[in-house]
Image 1: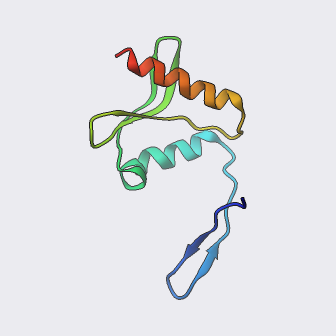
Image 2: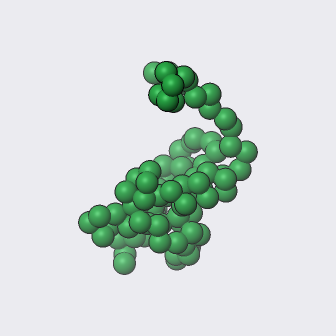
Length: 93
């Protein structure tokens, strides 16, 4: 499957050319500042410390369930493993 394309539909239809984010922190700031708009999740804390680690961002959804955000520039098995670890840790509380 190819990459998704985004379009600006003001004054016609124009494709938005994606840009590369050089630092994970840039995308983290963007998401945290717009979490409610993007995902309907209320932002709670950045760099939330937990036993044996931290979560990049944490929010809470409309059902008062925690929503964990992790930001990665690359994709590999460790990303999935980190997600599973975070899920297990949040179930402890």
